[in-house]
Amino acid sequence: MIRPFIAGNWKMHKTIGEAVDFASRLRKALAEPLEADVVIAPPFTALYAVAEALRGSEIHICAQNLHEDVSGRGAYTGEVSAPMLADVGCEYVIIGHSERRTLFGEKNGVIVKKIRTALKFGLKAILCIGETLNERDQGKTFTVVERQIKNGLSNFIVDDIKNVVIAYEPVWAIGTGKTATPEQAGEVHAFIRHTMEKYSGKDISRCLAIIYGGSVSPDNIRDLMAQRDINGALVGGASLEIESFIRIVKFT
Ligand code: 13P
Image: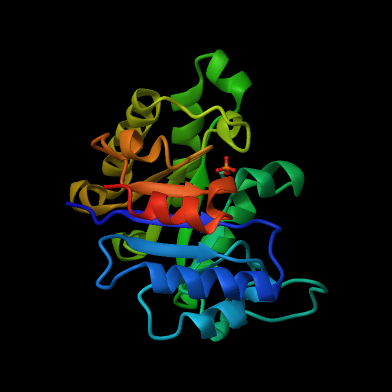
């Protein structure tokens, strides 16, 4: 049984004050030990303050991006390195989000480097994959997803993959209110697990957390989680409101 994994991706939202207020209220609302891995991904500016507010709790901190340089430093104005993120209290980092791929031109080459650098500095990677509406309409969902897995993960050894979570986020379902039906999502998750078995073996594919993202809400989380191969959620909009995020975390 894979432990449920619920992550909130705040994207470019919340000041430090708002972020700390959310984190403190979340901590109070969740009785430990938690029944799921609960992760929040504030913007860079709020990471340290949120990590302090959650120190000693079971809630994990995640960054939304990192720079790929494997040395962890250098002349990259405006960028943030993996060791800086680890230093500030992050355990996870989101890599390959579709907004990074489409708005910031991130290609597979850089995504692989980011995974490698994150793992080198002890961060766990949440690798996002997913097809566009156009690709789905053309019946290319499985081809696209397999290519993203192959390009992203096929060169990593099993010990690396243990520190990876795969987030299936169909691009057409992000921020649109259009969720994939639980069956549509479940089908792709099963395919992802099967593909991971092909590249990395049965043992690792059986314990890999594969989470769904795209218009997840308190109203659809339970049906999504009822699918055998959906192990959790990467939540955008609905993770910004404390009540809705708590309802998602406590989906059972
Ligand atoms: P929404 O939940 O707002 O659709 O965003 C999903 C997402 O991109 C999480 O990374």
